[in-house]
Image 1 (cartoon, rainbow, N blue to C red):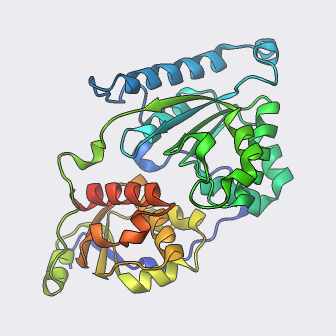
Image 2 (cartoon, helix red, strand yellow):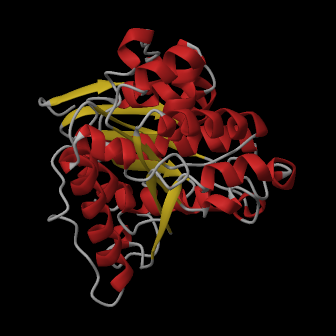
Amino acid sequence: MNAEQTLVALSDRSPQVAPEDLIAGLVPPPQFHDVSFASYRTDDSEPSQAQARNKLEEFVASSTSKGFLDKLFSKGKDGPKGVYLDGGYGVGKTHLLAAAWHANEKPATFGTFVEYTNLVGALGFIRARDDLSQMKLVCVDEFELDDPGDTVLMSRLMRELTDAGVKIIATSNTLPGSLGEGRFAAQDFLREIQALADQFDIYRIEGKDYRHRGLSEPAEPVPAENLDAVTAELAGTVARDDFPTLLSHLSTVHPSRYGRMVDGLDAAVWEDVKTIDNEGVALRFVALVDRLYDRNVTIINSGQALNQVFTEESLAGGYRKKYMRSLSRLTALSSQ
C-alpha cells in the first residue's frame, strides 16, 4: 500500500447527523466551494448559457440590493419569487446555483431536493419551514418529484417560504410543469405541480455535456487480477468495496447522509461491478454517484464497465434523466 494512503471501506461507514446540524450543513459541496458567476465558462455557440447566467446574476443583485419595503411591495404575493434553471446534464446548472449562493446575502441554504425532503422528515414541517423562513435565499439542486407525497409537501413548502419573502433558485432536468411524469400519475397532482411552477421565472440552458471532455464512455474496468496493484498506487484516502456489498449497505443509510459518508475521500475502488437490475437499488446508487461527483472523487473499478451499470429498461423508463446524469458523472470521475 502507498505510504501516503489511508484505506477505508464505505460499507463500514454509517454517518449520523443530528437534526440541529441539518440546516448548518446546507452549503455548497467542496467541488463548488469557490465558484462564481465569472468562473462559469459559457459555450459561445449556446447563447442560452450566458443569458441564464446574466439573469441569475441580476436576480441575486436585485434581491440583495432591495431594502425591506422594496421587497415587501415589489411583486406582491402573486408574482414569481424565484428562478428555475432547466437544462440537460452537464451544462453547469449546479455551478450557477452555487455561484448564486456565494453572491447572495446570508443566511442562505444550498442543498439537493432529497436533503430538503429529509430536513422536513427530521425536523417536522413546521420547524423546517420556520428555520428556512429565516433565509434570504434557498437553493434547491436536482429538483425532482418522485412520488405524490413529495409533490404535495414541496408545493406547500415552496409556497409558504415565498409568502414569507424567501427567494428560491432551483435547478432540474425537467420543466416544472412536467415534474413527476413517467413516475406517478402526475395529472392527478397537476394543481400542486402548477402551484410549484407559478413560483418561478423559468430559464432553459442548452448545451453539450461538458463533463465528457471529448470522452463518450467511462474508463475501462481494471482486470480483477490487477486491481490490488492499481489500488496500491493511489494516494490519499481510498475507499475500497465489493460492489454488491456496497449496494446492500446503501439501503441502511438514508441518501441524505451519503455526502457525510463520502466526505474526505480521494478515490473509490469498486470490485466486481455488476449491472443493477433493481430500480430502488439503482436510484440509491445514483444518489451516491451524485455525492461522489460533488467531491470530485476518482472512481476505479473491476467487473462490468460503468456504462453497463444500469439496465436498458432503466435507461428507457421514467427515471431516464437521472440515470443519464449519473452515467455522465461516472464518465468524468472514472476518466480523471
